[in-house]
Image (cartoon, rainbow, N blue to C red; front, side, top):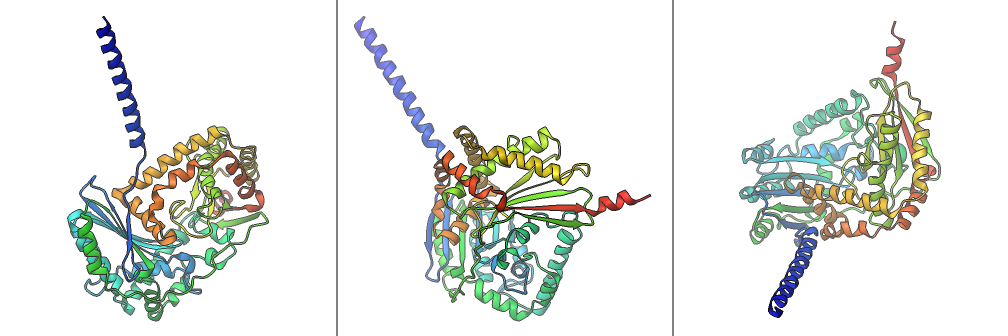
Length: 463
């Protein structure tokens, strides 16, 4: 009998031990750690390698530390124009051959210009990694800068401006408009898509100078994410990028914004819009500060998802609009910028609803938020933030991961920050959040931009 009880006791101990081990394993599995190896070539190129054998693909991303903010005065839209020039031919690849090279090897590619960087990426079968590294290095070495190519791309970009902004209802609203209204420093407040006169004024000397100044290895970051051999990749990077010379980089201009002390309200007439629209923006706390992370959680509480306060008030309760969109950094995410920024939300509403009604409803939500955020609210926001973060890290075969790695390398010299983001959000307390609300969601830090729908007025006037 004693032996039987002893055997049962040992079995129970074993089961408890297994259960505890299972809990520990589950806890370990819940923490996702992005592999990061970071180093620099002698010419200053920042290199980030992040292997992932989930699929037989590789992402190659090259980010240059030049964006809209610091493009030349009287050359608005030049950073964007130059992005187009990067596909017009290099030393060994003729016009459009870069695109053909990627696509013929089963890959996809793109480029974009943002506030603080211009990026280029390819997603290819992993056995084509060396080819992509060679191609990216080839255009970093030098472009085929000709008047024909420049004139062609000036036309392309001007048409893009016309299609996406000038001839589009709500064109540029609010992603292009709001920075021009909310900011005071020219570098943050100019038309970064490009004034048509400025685009026409760009010349070959501008293009050559811009390339020589900013498209250098010591002003760039290269990340590779995917299924590749680390040592092989390092050898290829050294082979193709190692001999490209560094340049003397110019001193960066002051892009700081003064503390906003008065509320701003603007109206934009839109002859193509048939309903009014409103956008509301607040200047963000300094990047990487405790308040910055608090604002990331406030974004989840206020704007993101069906349970967001603005959604509940403006959509579910009052029915003023069918959707409230918004967030931090309309041209990316809250992590991939490096200067002044706004948290913003926007929506359209029926002509029967007045702007005064809309603002009254918004004020009621903000007043509710000012009463204080509880730990329960923060816990729910953290779950949403965590989901959003891991969507970013896992998206597009690793492109989201490559984006953060390059951004953190360029802006912080620390791509491993990618693994501490979740912990930073977990540090946020209700006290920090409520302090953030008091300083950054005050009305004197607010800019309201309303679209006046002239098309609706014209239609009303018709017999």
